[in-house]
Image (cartoon, rainbow, N blue to C red; front, side, top):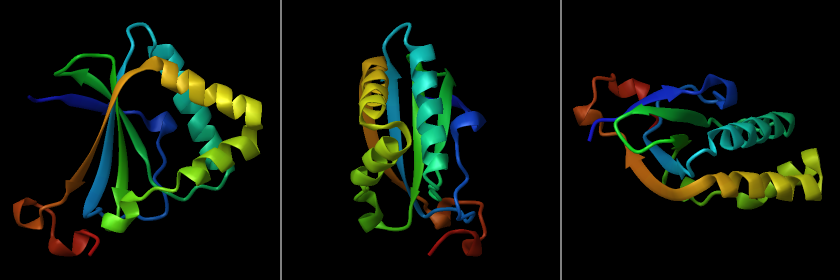
Length: 140
């Protein structure tokens, strides 16, 4: 299946590292029908909160334009190695509570979750021998 996604600049963060990652975590969110605006609002609030918390991690959001069941969003999270897939969920909860307070952070998580119909998480790995990138471009 060929899918076309559009980068959602307003809620994505470039982070500190600019090199091409060798690995990444891809999370695909299939939304409930009619919940796109609710999901966008939750993404904006998450993004604002992470920026206020001083998050230096790179994360990029994409919206499906063509090639699958919509509405669908994809989150790209670069990873240095396999150990980096063990994400610190506590950091997200703490950052949300610190910026929004406990009650508002719980409401935001509930808003995000209520919009999602299904969720799929995958690991991808750059294959330098199949890439057009020069070897020095990839993080070793």
